[in-house]
Length: 197
Ligand SMILES: [Zn+2]
Ligand SMILES: [Zn+2]
Image (tube, protein in one colour):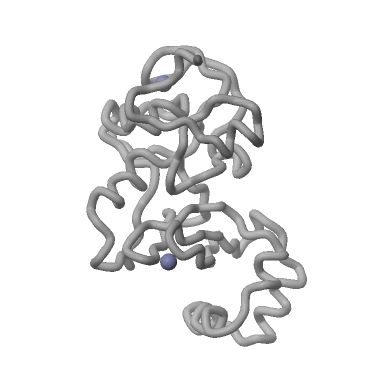
């Protein structure tokens, strides 16, 4: 049993299986190692003061956190890093459905690793819940994106089908504009949003 475990924080079975490590379960961000939101970067956590092999070096929106603070995943998962620095790791966006409970929004802001984006980040919602974030979409994701949802997306970003086909043909993750992928935790629907510098 790792001494890193915290009360009230589940271990991620998915991360254990994929990376062979004990790592907290982030319900709204299943694999922050894949997106490099939390990286293999051994050192001291600026919240609990303990050594951690993996640390979060992404943004914390805080008026009092010194530049470059790095946290172990456990201090993010249990909310202690957000509490210590009176900060948030994500912005919930402006288009939040009314049926999403405030505690869900707080979980995304205070207990979920930062999603790296060009602008201030945004989150997506479905079935009265925040979605799981997967970071940058893959080209396969975008090629499979179609139907009514794609029409709405193109309208939102004022793109024609030709614009979209041209974009997808040169698309690579982390390009500008970027497309981020989210998945509904209840019905499995995939949702995307576009972001640019
Ligand atoms: Zn810590
Ligand atoms: Zn849903």
